[in-house]
Amino acid sequence: MTQTGPTEVRPLGGVRILIPRGGPWGNAVASELRELGASAVVAPMTNFVVTDDAAALESALADLRDGAFDWVTFTSATTVDVVSAYRAVIPDSTKVAAVGETTAEALKVAGYRADLVPSEENTAHGLLTEWNGATGGVVPLRVLTLRAHDAIPVLTKGLIRIGHDVQSVVAYRTVGVDLEESIVSAARNGEFDVVLVTSGSVAQQISEQIGTIPEKTTVAAIGPRTAKDARAFGVRIDVVVPTDMDEMISAITMSPRKAIAPA
Image 1 (tube, one colour):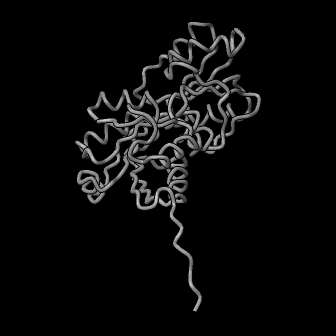
Image 2 (image 1 turned 90 degrees about the vertical axis):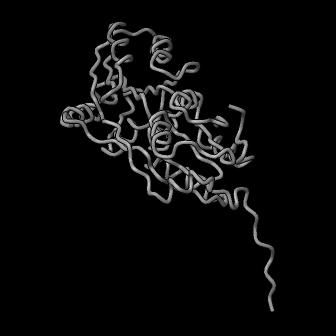
C-alpha cells in the first residue's frame, strides 16, 4: 500500500477573504489568493453604468485609438474598467497618466501602462503638481480626460488653466450593487478573516449594506487614500496594504491578521 506524504500547507490555508470588487482586478487578486490556499470570495459592491452620452465616449475612444491625443488621464480604477470593457486601444504615441497607485495597478492588470503616477499625493491635485515636470513643460498638449459623472473636474480645469487642449468625457456613473444576504450575514458575523476595501465608493457600500464589521475581522484598505475615504464613511480600517498587487498579496500572506502596517 502506497503512503501519501503530508498535505502541503499553503500560506493562506483556511483564511477567508472578501473581495468587494469584480472585473479583471478582482478576479486576478482572487486567483492569486486561492493559489495560496485562501477562500477568496468575489462579491462586487459597486458597478458602473454608461451615461446618457455614451456616443461621446465611444467617439473619444475611437479618436484615442487613432492617436488623436498626446495624453490620456485616468482618475480611478473604475475608469480603467470602463475603458477595458470597451476594449479600447491606447497607442504607443499616447502617454497615460494615472491619479495614483491603485489606478496604475488597475491599468497594469487590464493590459495597459501608466507613464505618470504622482509620487507624493495620489489626487488630481498631486497629478497636476507633477504634470509639467513629466511633460517637459510642453504646451499645448492634446489631452483626453475621462471621469465619473459626479466627479468634480479638478484635473480637466487645471490642465485647461495651464494651456492644454483638453477633451473631457464622462465615462460612467457609479452605482451600488446589493450583496447576497448570505455574504452580508457572513460579514456581520465575522466569518471573513479579511475584508478588503478597494475604494471610497466600496467603503460607502460597506457602511450602508454591512455596517459595523466585527473586531475579529481584519479590515484592510488598499492604499492610504482609500483608508482616508473609508474612515469618512465610518468604516474601521485596521491596516493599509500596498496598491501593487504582488506586494499586497505578499503582505496578506505574511500575516493576514496584520497585513502590513498599522493603519
